[in-house]
Amino acid sequence: MFYRPHEGHGLPHNPFNAIVTPRPIGWISSRGADGSDNLAPYSFFNAIAYTPPQVMFASTSDKPDRPRGKDSLGNIEETGVFCVNIVEFSAFQAMSDTSGAYEREVDEFARVGIEKAQCREIDCPMVAGAPAALECRLVEVVKLRGPSNYMAIGEVVGVHMRDDCLKDGAFDITTFQPLARLGYRDYTRVAEVFTLKRPDDA
Image (cartoon, rainbow, N blue to C red):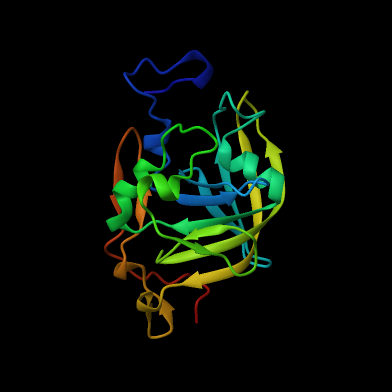
């Protein structure tokens, strides 16, 4: 099969998300200029540089109570900071519950019953007990092609790792099995890893 996106695919559901998988989930916490907190998952998310460490996530829809983008983007543009919380498999339902299209004043931490902690380097909440969390300062928001597509790039200025996830000096993801997004309404978890040497490895 071959299709041109602008002509449509003719399938019951868009296959694009199912092709580009698995994708890590950035559980983005933010705080607005008015002090209101927000927590929402984004599967268009990834790390994009080592030095300095940088991450990105993309918001792909608008809300009627925001000038552009969603609450996460609005808060981040107001305050210049955000936190990426890593989602463990056991938190899949809580993560999903925070994805609702709530009013901007709704605190998803409180609504879903997620314990909140304070970041150290930035004025922003984080998910208490998350396997890892990345405190970020906004580098820039890039307007992508399409009416409601925006990419936020942040520089990581603080890194949290849960003690039980550190094994022999390495961050062991099998201890918490990170949740990953597939296509449609499907998810998976990483429970098994293998090591593969590169040609230039000694």
